[in-house]
Amino acid sequence: MAASGAGKWGRLVSRPVVRWTALVAIAAGVLIAAFALPKAQPKAQPIAVDDAVVLAADTALGDAMRAADRRTTRRLLALQFSFVDADGKTYARKDFLRDLAHFAAGAASEPKVRGYGLVAQVTGRHKSAHDTDVFFLDVWVRQKGAWRALLTQEVPIANADNDTTAATPSSKHSASPAASPP
Image (cartoon, rainbow, N blue to C red):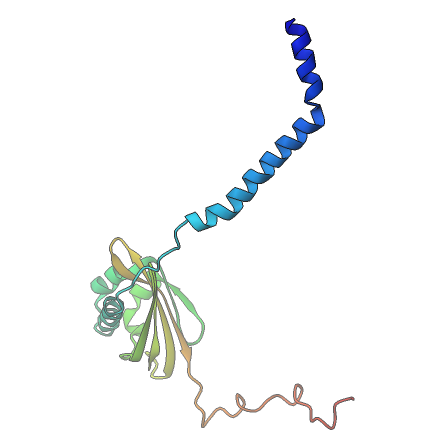
């Protein structure tokens, strides 16, 4: 009898029905997961950066550089620190510390701080060690509970009175509308 009952059940449920039922169940599970999971995950909250603390660290670094205070400067620099001067030359941390007086710049005018969690940037203008006006970018990282300078870059600011080539386009790239083909 048991054999005849199993045969009867086997005839009632065919293999294509079982396959389609399994396929529908898997598709339903995928759809539920696709629409339910993104709503269940919390949105990332920005990490607040205390701009005053970053600016104080940046000011302390500038003061230590001008005073040729290697100990304080070393404490404020990340181990991976690099400096890019206005000529585009890059100096590693040890080279920067070795000739600190060579890189000492004037105090920043109107510095601006932007925080990005564990990273912050300070931008502004100052006089470079060679007494030229430069735009600077200092990148700071939060390491071991303190803000440390990771990168300092200086970019020369073109003098509008002396640099007329920056304002006039090259003759190669400028064409009058009359000279251009229709």
